[in-house]
Amino acid sequence: MAQQVYTLLVEVGRNPGDGLPKGATGAALVCYAAGKDEAEAVRETVAILKQADLAPLDVTGYGTLDERLAEGHEIPDEERALMDRALSENAVIIAQMDPFFDDGPGADDDRH
Figure 1 (cartoon, rainbow, N blue to C red):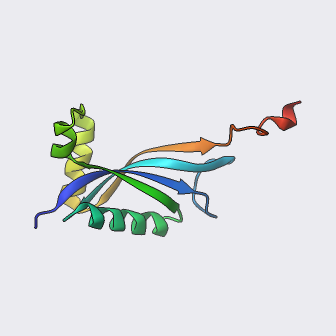
Figure 2: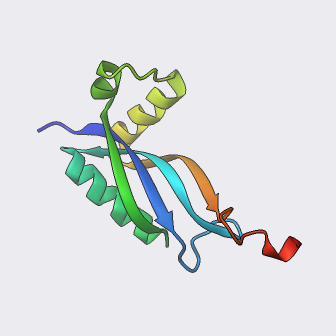
């Protein structure tokens, strides 16, 4: 079976040495991962993130390029280039990282 690239959204928690900003409670990562199927892409992505001292909590798959196009997603050239790179290098590419900060109730108590 040929390798394909899958778009994954990974939520990570905190871990010592994870490199996330001070005060962050975790992060969301958009990853492009090569694999013969989505399950392999998820396993590889989780393994790579753990090696990078990140703490994966949840993975949501958004499918291959063709599947995303069939769902009507607009995929810019920059994103396609990262997908091509993931495929050619048989790699996991982290395309975006958005840290989470606790803005919930009680988060502002020290300002009162």
